[in-house]
Image (cartoon, rainbow, N blue to C red):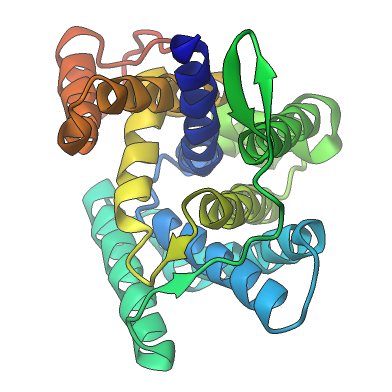
Amino acid sequence: MEWFQQLVNGISLGSIYALIALGYTMVYGIIKLINFAHGEVFMVGSFIGFYSIVGFGLDFFTALILAMALCAIFGVLIERVAYRRLRSATRIAALITAIGVSFLIQYTFIRIRGAGPEAYPEVFTNRTFELFGAQISMKSVLILSVSIGLMVILQFIVHKTKIGKAMRAVSQDTETARLMGINVDNTISATFAIGSSLAGAAGVIFGLYYTKIDPLMGVIPGIKAFIAAVLGGIGIIPGAMVGGLLLGVVETAVSASGYSLWRDAAAFVILILILIFRPNGLFGKNAREKV
């Protein structure tokens, strides 16, 4: 069943978009900022995983955890250096700053190591097994399993832990949360840390899936993850998950139909349609905003 194999491949790809989109939607839900530097955190995570495996001989899961930890620290640094002083600034100022940080990370990284691509090592044998008549690779199963596991952990953190409750409180009303004794600055930093760690994990998984990485690799996946967040409803965590999975399935279906050159365009067509017909996303609700 070729359609089943395409579905598995689409969900595997979509789970990568979902992990990146979660960072976008978490940050937007807390401080209403679209962090366009998030794609570069994804790129840095991919290279951390690469050098951990090739340079230090670590196994895949250790490299994954290391990339998540270092990207969490990197995300907090970005928030404190670039965004914290812009809390009371206009949204356009914060947006321009985010774009500037994105370019700064890209070209600083190129200055340090060059712009050449790297080939991700084969950390797992590319074995396949048959399921419902389709040949499914173990790599796709691994990617899907890790992605779903991380999403489940995120849901647990947001809904069952103290920091998760603080994040939800700050997203509802920052000033009231502050009056109730919540440390807003630490909560925002934790949000950046969690979102960035997921982007780092997505970077390692992306390298495993596509085998080729480069310093500009975060641009297109970052934009597609943003589209996934908008599709699901920006600021809504389940929406980012569903949006990423749907986008991956659509792209795989377009490629399988013989229009592989149009797979990137499909994402932007979806963005245009969702902005025209349902600007709040699939899970979003109409809400009036005070100006």
